[in-house]
Length: 173
Ligand SMILES: Nc1nc2c(ncn2[C@@H]2O[C@H](COP(=O)(O)OP(=O)(O)OP(=O)(O)O)[C@@H](O)[C@H]2O)c(=O)[nH]1
Ligand SMILES: [Mg+2]
Image 1 (cartoon, protein in one colour):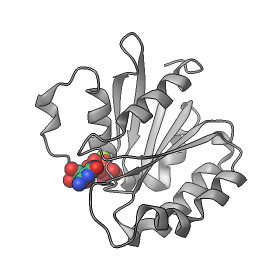
Image 2 (cartoon, rainbow, N blue to C red):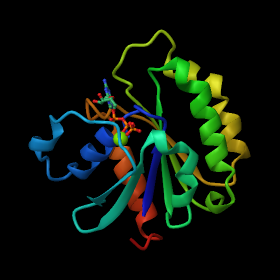
Image 3 (spheres, protein in one colour):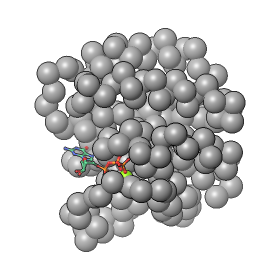
Image 4 (cartoon, helix red, strand yellow):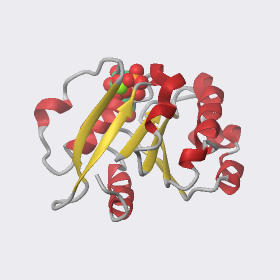
């Protein structure tokens, strides 16, 4: 089970939909708009053409009880909105809190900077500097991969799929 976390509106549901349809290229769901996730949302995803894994999105509004889902996950996908500089510090605190939780200290992470298609006055590299991302990664106990994507434009989703495949071997879904 992969756990998909991140603040409200960072694009988790859209990203999950795009990942689910990565190989099928099912256009019907892609154009549908999203609504804020109340509770959790579990989706079966083909990590490649032969293997499936489950992804559980937990809504950003559920932040105070994300921890309830930590024990049953094997890897964490943490999404940050790179086009929303005002949310960066709260996302960073959330990320540090999640990374330091004892149930997650041995579990691999991918940090996904989403909405990279939206022009922002603060460049993605400056967002990462603001978060002191290099220091965060160095201090973390987990292996962490970082990717910049656009769920809307379907940019760079291959990197997420590759990370999911490499983690799948160790995951019992
Ligand atoms: N431009 C752009 N918009 C995006 C992208 N990803 C998501 N969105 C939009 O951002 C809004 C929020 O996306 P959601 O996927 O519902 O966000 P969420 O993280 O699931 O939010 P919660 O379920 O409330 O925690 C929607 O209008 C999406 O269409 C992206 O890469 N680029
Ligand atoms: Mg959602």
